[in-house]
Amino acid sequence: MSTDATALDALPVGAVGERSVGWWGMLCLIATEAALFAYLLFSYFYTYVQQGRAWSPQPHPPIALAAANTLVLLASSGSAAWADRAERRGARTPAITALALTILLGSLFAIVQVFEWRAKPFTLTSGSYGSLYFTITGFHMAHVLAGIVMLGVILVWTALGYFDRRRHLPLSIGVVYWHFVDAVWLFVFASFYLLPRLW
Image (cartoon, rainbow, N blue to C red; front, side, top):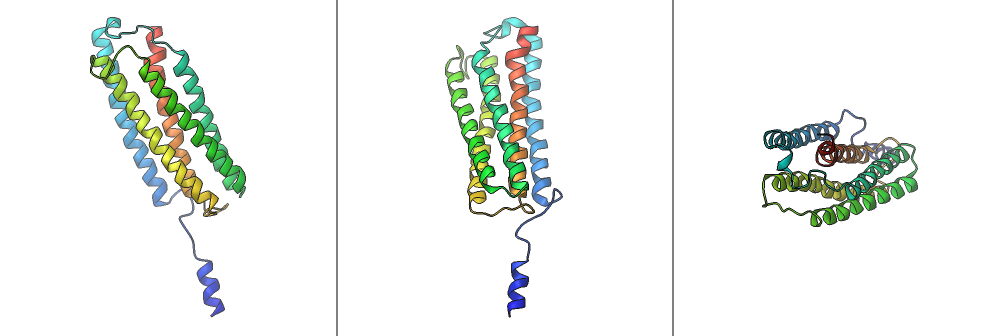
């Protein structure tokens, strides 16, 4: 009887390694979402080339708030990587701290983005530029909010001790998604705030 109980305790509690279904599922999701962002940004650049500089209501959109927000998001990517490394070492408390910091920074990014939207002199319906700006940044915001929810669930699981050095794949998958969200923002930031200053 005790042998059976020991055998049951030794059974795997989740997928191990980067070849699991969850890992490949996340990579497929990222590829799909990256394609959608590529289509949206292509629409932006195509319209910009067709219409010229006069198309943008702000030839040089204010960059200060968006640049600060970019730094916040990059810092959140660093704390997410910290959480992943900590859990791989079996250091649960640092992993929890890093995940909480990532969620806090992601939430700060979302709040600042709302202020950024409100400061714009155009709206979603004021023209094709406003439509593309709010669609692309809004689509990104939806991914940020999904990432915050995902990391929140992972934070609870981490606090409950569901992960260890060997089994921490959900946390790693969540971190990869968060890095994707951050990388996409760099393209969005460059498209709307940096490149118009170079043209």
